[in-house]
Image (cartoon, rainbow, N blue to C red; front, side):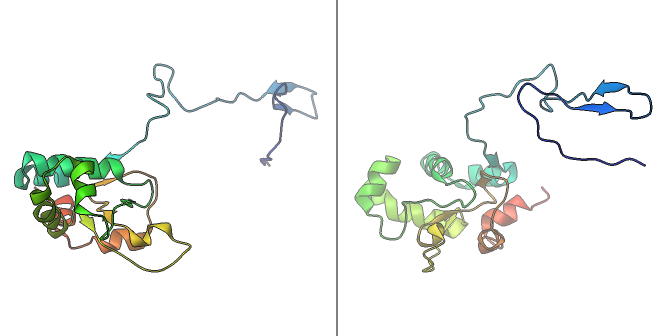
Length: 171
């Protein structure tokens, strides 16, 4: 019969197995991590983001270089695990968007209307004080996402968008 047990150790202690019949003491080897010996953690303080090639390839075919640049900046702005584009929302002024995205004031409305129509971002507002992302624009997670999990409600908001369809295409 075998069993396992969790044991808390001090920094100067190691786990060991003791055979009560023979008195043999065998230190338990433990790996400090699961990183192969010929590898290192690259840029450990960097933020990890998942980008989805099919969605980006689609955008590359339908956006101008300026629009593509704005989408890329939106992706960098998105908050981890929620994809909230805080502080951007419907009350964000045109002069603020001009400065934030380095675009002309006459291009702001048509550019963001096109991105909204494509499903690059969504507008979602619910008044729930315990959920901070409910009054801001949200980046489509089928384009880019950082984090291990996402609330299923957020992902469901973007099902059926042009971006989600490109993400799921079998090109």
